[in-house]
Length: 313
Image (cartoon, rainbow, N blue to C red):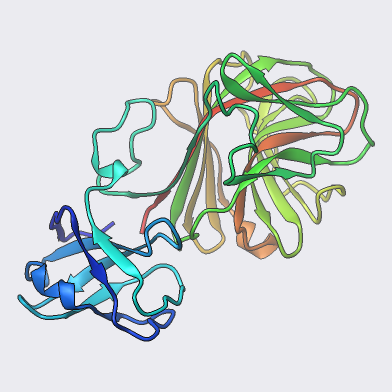
């Protein structure tokens, strides 16, 4: 999180003159930058490059009044063609947020957001989502939410099913948070249901959530692929007992090979059930998903109301 002061510039726009703007370039040129205010060492301005396309948000860290170039910080490695539009405006995450999903830190940048609703709860009709190895599982509308329904019979292997998204970037430090409604529970069927990460190149994944194998607990599991179980990367949590509806989960990357897993019954009081988990040793995630696995016959319903991701750097 930046300790400098945000300078708000609304409805300023222009086109870049770099031909092209190279991935990772930290100087950007545009005639319209002359209209931006000066930015010194204690301030910054957010710009979006190619809005509606790549949607790369950059942080202007230096600009001289009337100059036609800016110095920026960039978290994405994207090349932009000459003439691509830039815009400086108020973002959705600048507006007051619901108590239901406040930013983890003041000023944290929202980098991914999806909310299920009655019209589009049969995702992935939503173009930003995709099925994740659904096999014979179905995804149905229930109460205006997206609900994952596991089939009644499955192979006796760890099989992940769900809906996944591809965030624009995975910063060095981030937080992924989701609100769930668990509408049907069965004990004793070796089920893990909740929030997950996947490396698309290798198909490895990490699933974090509620474990129903021997009572209702919180746990996590890693896989070498989406159908073969490996030794769990950690023990199930000590938190047991009644489930809550709604309930919340957090996957938080603090640093390299340093992931924390938390849950909450209300979105306010959070309880850590695993810390310093070495996910990066296992995989490099580039996808997020909601869903679950089952190694025996089951019919578990998991509804996800919303899922969001913040940049904590």
